[in-house]
Amino acid sequence: DAGVTQSPTHLIKTRGQQVTLRCSPKSGHDTVSWYQQALGQGPQFIFQYYEEEERQRGNFPDRFSGHQFPNYSSELNVNALLLGDSALYLCASSFVQVIGVPNEQFFGPGTRLTVL
Amino acid sequence: KQEVTQIPAALSVPEGENLVLNCSFTDSAIYNLQWFRQDPGKGLTSLLLIQSSQREQTSGRLNASLDKSSGRSTLYIAASQPGDSATYLCAVYSGAGSYQLTFGKGTKLSVIP
Image: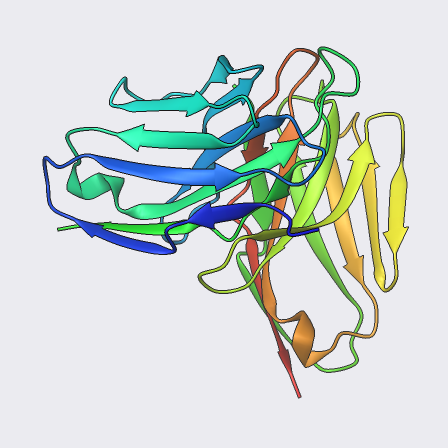
């Protein structure tokens, strides 16, 4: 079992550019969540995808958008990058055992985004 | 709005010591609580998940307890080793229908050989 995988590992962009990050969930998992972790802080919830739809969203602007594919993998897109978007972006996967009941989440290694 | 606080922010102990990390949350109506370990620049490794109906969970040298009424959880690490050095994060699911984890800022643990 490969666990949760993310690509790329590192990324450097300039202000105003757009970026796409990718995530493949753990085998058997159908739900993907994205988190942003600034240096020295705990991860902050961006959104969660289930059945190819955004199920819940945190307090992030519309510049942050996502997608989930039929194979359960997911993308995070960030438009009009700001310096403050520099962070470690973490993907987590889980599976729905009972609707409405959150299950244990397993995290990937993250993508380090630097905005210059 | 749920807030999670972890004390202390950093801790340094000699190898072999038993230690306790603390986590508190403002809204006691949580669903589950999860403890993670994070090595520098890396992703999160799940250590223990405590469901709201449970009071504690154990895995090897780790024991986590949960007191929902007081809004507190502790992670006990027995016989610490240098390999335990990492940042430990506590996170909660807030109530039914919420799928997001709310994290504390973590406790950075250093175990000195």
